[in-house]
Image: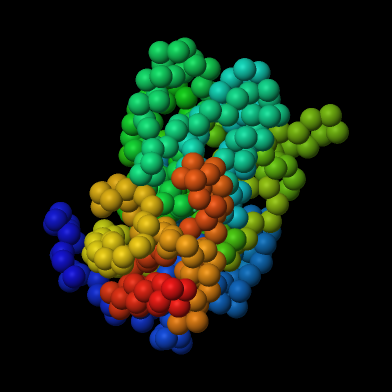
Length: 420
Ligand SMILES: Cc1ncc(COP(=O)(O)O)c(C=O)c1O
């Protein structure tokens, strides 16, 4: 495979196929080409070990007791927060809120920001290519508040028409936009959205920008502050961590002003019959007993990524992506969605085969042990725009190999042969 153009700062040898050895499930199933990484990733041994060790050696409830075991659990939880803080280059652990995943983070933000900022006639700006998790919570918030959900339109190649921002400025609607939310990378088409453009536009108008990093956190180094966004959310299970783990990063000045989403234990400072006051950040947004093991497992996953070097993992993926793009575009009759420019797309290959339903494609591929996903990928508005009900979707992680991609391409030809 060819090396990327930009030299890596990390001088270690390139990450090779041996990285697969870190993943027990993949080693136990050498026959499997796992290409459903946009849905969830496999877990390295380090994560399984961290979960096991936590429950064997530290399990007890956090923050609330004075005995040593609870202290150990609290330290593990808060250390995990520090790991996330470093990973994202956040400016304080107060900005890191543990969630159950991207969906929960976005629901928290949609509720809390709309309570703080939204009135009748205001606008929430999202894109036409969002996952339902970054669409429906905003739609519901708009309905609750008598506001309007406005979509940045998409173009035929699965990119966004950012010229629409000028339209909002010239027709006066920009003044009504109170919240903006955008995916970093589209789970439906793999498009890398121009976050910086929206961030600059939003910043100039003092509009908070929420970045859905569910599909970017596994694939590129994330510097939360440098994105220009005010909030960023991602899921642990897509970055090699446990299911039910996730992170919400927010700028402290915003989090301080926002009302809590859920109420109950842990997020409280004082409770009186007539009034309650809230705990300091980040606990104000962490009501109830958290999934401590999930947070510890997520931190182990981020440590695993850092130990290989996020840039080196990305470089390996870029090589795989170049190869995948070539192999898939060589398949006659394969309709590939999303931009062709490798700098505008990452890791996700959504396609259809003329005359064959995407479910049939995925089922056939399963028979030859190639695991991909088919359907609307929780992005019905995006599918509708493309005029299609569904796609077959293969998606990469650094543990994939060129052989996995060969098998995908061969299996796709096999489907065409079978349905001919
Ligand atoms: C772009 C994007 N946003 C949000 C989500 C929701 O993530 P989760 O189901 O982990 O909460 C996904 C999941 O696929 C996604 O790809």
